[in-house]
Length: 146
Image (cartoon, rainbow, N blue to C red; front, side, top):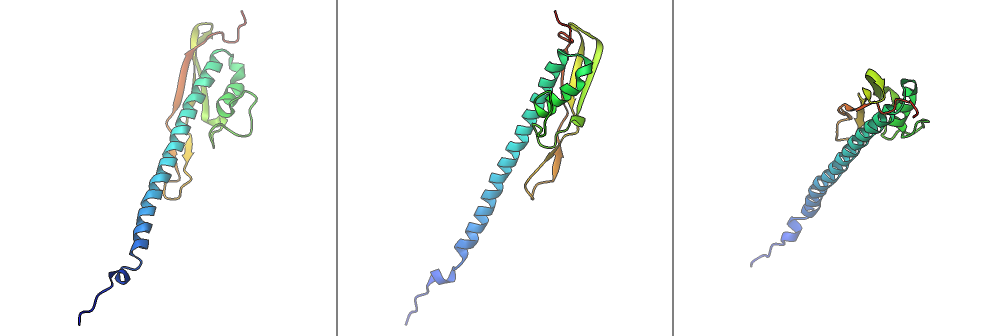
């Protein structure tokens, strides 16, 4: 007599293995997209912070450098406890003035240097060095009231 072979019993667990492989690839792709989005957000936030600091510095005297650094790091001149980007500190901000810094003369440059972006996923590297963000503007009023 012929014996009918049951293929379903021979393949027990195959679906589970296929699901595990597929889910692993899918979840790694999703988390990679999320981490890339965080890096892009940090890049945009740092670039905007340097621009905002340079605009403020172009209107104020060198005696207000602490306020400029606070504005770049915390988003306001009074300072704060939470930086706009995690792990950003006032030590990452450099302010350079050149020429005779007065009305429509001389320039001010605000740079964010040495920022380390921290990843949260274990299969990624711990951190990466972000590039230097710098903005240079001409002195507008340099603290002189009309």
